[in-house]
Length: 320
Ligand code: UDP
Ligand code: MG
Image (cartoon, rainbow, N blue to C red; front, top):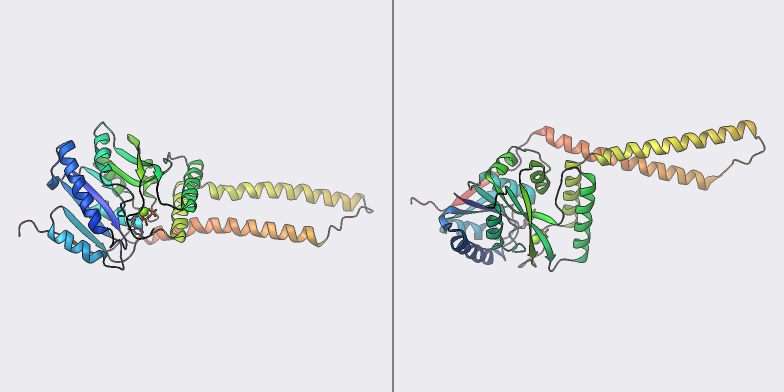
């Protein structure tokens, strides 16, 4: 197998037919541009516990047509885990990951592959422009990538999703990284080798709505930061050092006033007290919360459960 293409699918019934057609286009392009035959390309759909008709549509497609595989997970495990499951069963020398909603044009995979042949291990697609996404999504995404960059010492590219192609040796390392809270684009940057970005235009969703709700986005962002940085933990000790130092100076001042200047008026009253209590209380809870985020992740890791559960796999039996 030369090329595997991993496609996570969660409630995408309205897209599957169009996606299949675009995939056939892509296979044609692979033949004309790189001389790679359709039977050397496998498309792995990962059904991530869809609640609509996605699984039946994919089942029919994969049972009827060679070169299409359906990996059916037992429930919704999340986008990053779905990708992981697909990559785990991929057989190709080069493995591409693409969203199933046609926001990332499948034909671009051919260009990614051609670039890879120039001697790269990872070619990731950088979003040059994004159609049909809300200002809020664009703003939060751009802010997140930039904050993440500041917080980590791994060089994670800006404005880049999971749309990319990787060599077998990168995938082998990735498969050995068993962490539960996965931020795959960062993990791949961490692996190293020769990586390069390639610009492309991100389109509007073909149909349906984004499956990344605000809560999923926040969870994903926190996963990204906690897996690649312990700066939030250190932040609380820095804040602690500063407040303790200021507190010490101020206490000294009050003691001196009280001892040597009995006439001085130091009853500052309710306002200053309540401000101190609220500010310090808030900071303390925030610091505790940060510790909690890391602790919870350690807890999850120590359970050592499998990352996902496979319900079944469908593919056309060629020797029938
Ligand atoms: N997806 C998934 N599991 C989830 C959420 C999303 O497999 O829990 C898939 C979804 O079907 C799509 C891809 O991940 O193919 C990206 O999701 P989406 O387009 O909703 O994210 P966005 O592009 O809005 O960031
Ligand atoms: Mg999308």
